[in-house]
Amino acid sequence: MDLSNLQPAEGSVHNKNKRVGRGEGSGKGGTAARGHKGAKSRSGYSKKIGFEGGQMPLQRRVPKFGFKNINRKEYEGVNLDTLQALVDNGIVTDTVDFAVLVENRLATKNEMVKILGRGELKAKLKVTAHKFTATAKAAIEAAGGEAVTL
Image (cartoon, rainbow, N blue to C red; front, side):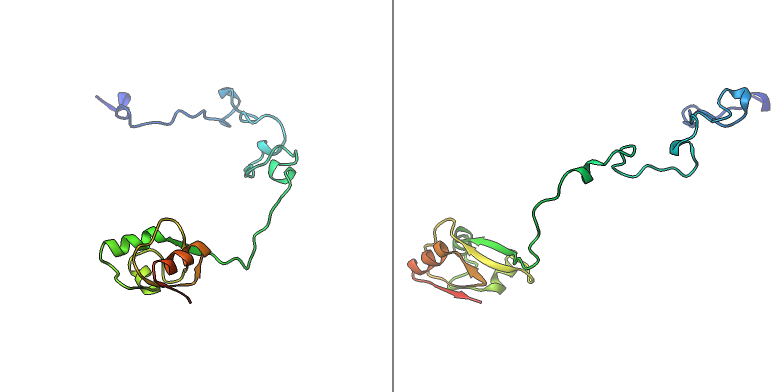
């Protein structure tokens, strides 16, 4: 081995790009394989997302619809069968308030809780929450419990 036959290690060089703009003799001089004129031939060109060659882009052709109600209140739903599971596991006995729900990761401290009516409740519970569905409230009271709205 000497300086005349040095070469990089096998697999260490990946650059297989055309060397453009390196003189006429290379065959890729002049326009450097960019064609003549137009935005794509210029330096610094980058196509905007959704650009369709000047045609009106899809996101501007299609009409917008619907709206977001800025006053909407989001509630975290907790079902009756979930409350019954807390009773079955011995986590609660008589009262379920917001602190208990946060403790058991059924809601976070910044959320509002709505008790929903899926499943059945056999235990007599005093449930405190921000909202109740009619079926949930009826089921809690039918079991001898109490539904307290925060």
